[in-house]
Length: 106
Image (tube, rainbow, N blue to C red; front, top):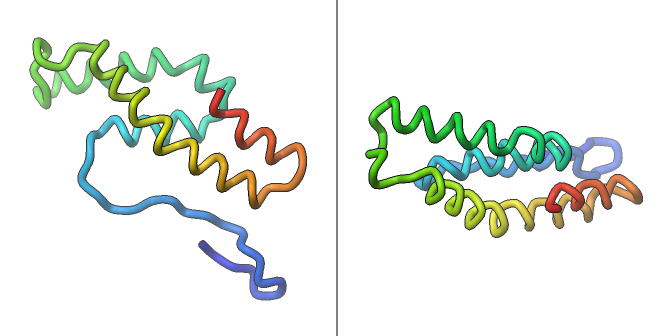
């Protein structure tokens, strides 16, 4: 978190951290930050592309990590990781913008 010198109010929240975890977490954060409308439009395309790249790079065995399983992982990680961020953002963003920051969870 960064602070404005004059007002001592936060103006930037950075939720990045270094950890080991499934790559689908990065996709969760990326799609979350796009907002609801764009996320809904591109979510399946991005997930299919990501799965295809996992398979073509040899990172996973296509028989052991099906698209449906990856999508279930995406859903399982999206809610506990992205909901708290949206709720936290709503505390720092006034009025209608606060509503929009939580709208991305729909």
